[in-house]
Length: 260
Image 1 (spheres, rainbow, N blue to C red):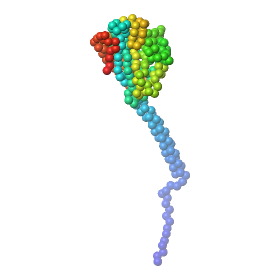
Image 2 (image 1 turned 90 degrees about the vertical axis):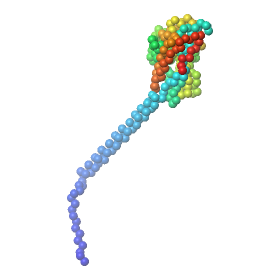
Image 3 (image 1 turned 120 degrees about the horizontal axis):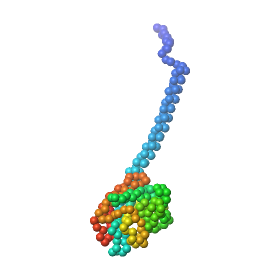
Image 4 (image 1 turned 90 degrees about the horizontal axis):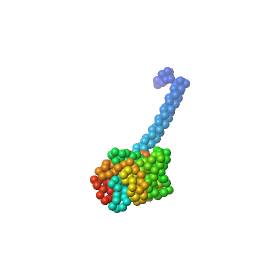
C-alpha cells in the first residue's frame, strides 16, 4: 500500500491584522453615520411633505360660496325710495370639505366700476388699530348693522366705507358669534355691505334698520345698469369673485335680486 503523504503549504495571500480590523470598524461607523443622516433627512422631508399637503388642501378646498345677493333700497315709505341700492345682503356658505373660515379675517373688495372699497369685519382691529365705531361683540347682528350704516369716527372714517357686518342663518355647532364669526361646513351666514350713496342720506329706513336719516355715505353708487365687482379674500383658501350688473330699472321694488 502506498504511503499517503500529506504536505502543508503556506498561504501568504490573505491579510490578517490590526490594520484590517481598523478599516472594518471605520466602514461600519461610516455606514452607521450615513444611515442616521438618511433617516433624519427622510423624517424631515416627511414632515415638510405633510405640512405642504395640508396647506395645499386647505388652499384648494377652503373658500366661501355665494348663495345669493340682494340689493336693498333705502326708503321713507313704499312709494318713496332711493334711486340707488343702499345695502348689499349676501348669503354665503362654505365649499364641501372646506376647513373652518374665520370671517373676522375676511377682506371684501367691492367696486361700482369707478369707486373701490376694501372692507373688513367690524370686530377686526388689526388693520386700522381700532374696531368699527360702536361695534359690540355682545350686541345683536341688527344692532351692529345699524352701527355699520349710521356710525362714524375720526379714523378711519364712516363705518360704511371701511367695514362689513355678518349675521348667522344656520349654525348647528354654535361656532358663530358676533365677536368670533367662525363658519364651518354646513353653516350659512348673511354678509352686509353698505352701499349708501351720497345722495341718499335723507331716508329713514334701510331694510330692517331704522336709520332716522342719519346713514353715512359709503362712497359707492349702485344705480341701474351698474357693474358691481366683488372679491372675497379669506385668510386661507381660494378667493371668490363675483361680477354682476344691476337691472336697467328698479321700479317700485325695495329688494332687488342681483345674484344668481
